[in-house]
Image (cartoon, rainbow, N blue to C red; front, side, top):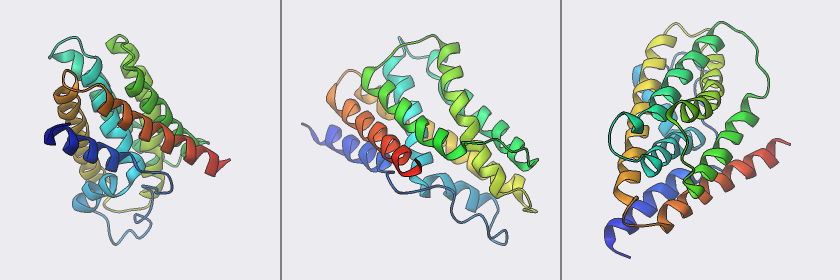
Length: 200
């Protein structure tokens, strides 16, 4: 295994370790919000980080060629995360937020393992559903923050960067390695399963 593949495996596996971590810590103190805090939040919350990288990874692994097909999943995830956050800011209560976030890891991990190829619209619907719940979690935390929109702008920027990281890794590995993405997908899926068990 060459050094490039080893480095990619290490990075993806690190992103996937989210068995006990949660990305919903640190925003309750609204004195510490703003663009930078929002930007760092998904990166420090490993469940969000793993899901976002996995979406990009899956999109790159299953795209038939470079182009718009690569972007259906990532752009829909980012858009629906923002929509979910805006719903959460309004205080609209939707149940099962944490279980759905855990389920998003399980499902996206399995999609990466299987390299399941679906249409762009189907990919958008799959990841978009889960993204709403990721956004809701953020929106609930920021509901009374005076800098909620600046914080969300930071989160959205980080989300797009994490998707781009997943896309780049997936594109680099799609023709050079079969097992590295599968191992990463298995780690993401396992972490989602463990989180579901913890929430049961």
